[in-house]
Amino acid sequence: MGEFFTIYSFHVKETVKKKGFLYSTLILVAFLLIASYFSYQSSKNPDPDKILISSHMTGANLDKKQFTSVFDKDEYDIQFTNKSDKALEKEVKEKDIDGAFVLSGSLEKPSIQHYYRYQPSQDISLFIEKSLENQVIGTTLTKANVNPTLLQDTDSMFQVKNKEIGNSDNDYGLIYPLIFLMYVFVMGFGQSIAMSVVSEKSTKVIEMLLPRMSAIRSFYAKIFSAFTSGLIQLCVIGLTFFFIKQVGWVDDGSMSMLGFSIQLDSFNLTTILWFVYFFLTGFTLFGLLYASLGAKVSRVEDLGTVLTPVVFLVMGAFGLGIFTIVSPESIVSEIAGYIPFFSPTVMMARILMGVASPGAVTLSIVIFFIALVGMTFLCQRWYVRGISHYGSGKKRKKAKQK
Figure 1 (cartoon, helix red, strand yellow):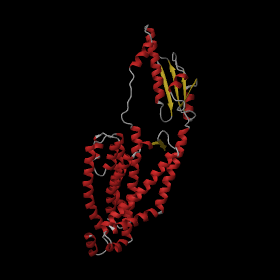
Figure 2 (cartoon, rainbow, N blue to C red; figure 1 turned 135 degrees about the vertical axis):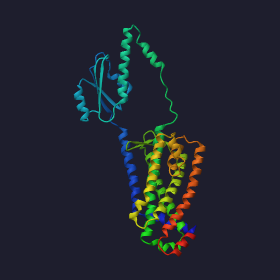
Figure 3 (cartoon, one colour; figure 1 turned 90 degrees about the vertical axis):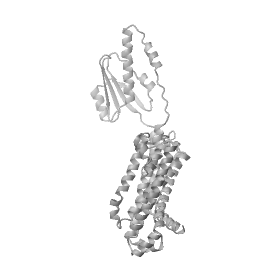
Figure 4 (spheres, rainbow, N blue to C red; figure 1 turned 90 degrees about the horizontal axis):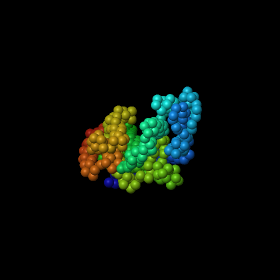
């Protein structure tokens, strides 16, 4: 074990002292601080969307009081105008206003035009449609000598009370950053493991080290030193988020960043423990592949071709993890949760979303560890054979015995 910790500590110190590691950590911290600060400032005093309504419809009764009582003034600045549809279309196109509605015709034959650039104002559209429909029904009831207030009484009788069992926004804002971090760190530090192996082979350093150390211990030392380096960087990111929360750059427990809401209040000890577990196991599995396949080549230039299958597996795990957030109870998510290469992201998402049963979680963990034992045996053999390619047969035999 002393040999293992010597190699392990050497690689950890070597990685942490590298300028690339230090610069990437500083860039991540600076990016999080700058992005969170400006996102917080922009969300603090957002400019409301300016919406103009031009009503030339005969018999329609729409006024600003109706809209101001329904819509938040901080979200919409709704104004009425008599401008033509062409003038309003030009203003929207030239970005003078965010959207415009032009009502013409009559209640019997209405014509409603909605001008916008990217996304329609669906809530305002629905309010206008509902208001005009009520006026048409009210007029019809009046002509039939029926009291129009009966319509209001009927509407109040059939009100749906929405009760959300799960909070999809919180789930997405909680799980997506975790899956993304896992994907980035597995890709980045996995590549560093393979690069370290190839560098030792290309410079023939391994030829001098192999008779003096165990290839297997070097194999695991590289993997766990990369994991430790990644964990150090994750801790720095976690402390950055803690600082952001402490200084108050959050809005109702969430932090907006590049249009994406990260739910900081949703983080708890259980979430952190599950993330660390899946990060450790997933990183170990892919680290085995990165180290063993990196030992197959002797030049850095040849590394990309060998690692392509692993890259596709990591990308598949990331994609299926995102798919699971959208559809956690689909058959694809259920099956992927039992596949070892995909279960670190998929099963983590299913657990944090509360859709994975204890039996499913236990079965997934058992399958994963059986696969991990098998992959460990195979990757050890691949690594020893690949890393001992240099030197005599006596050296290779000695490395296998160790």
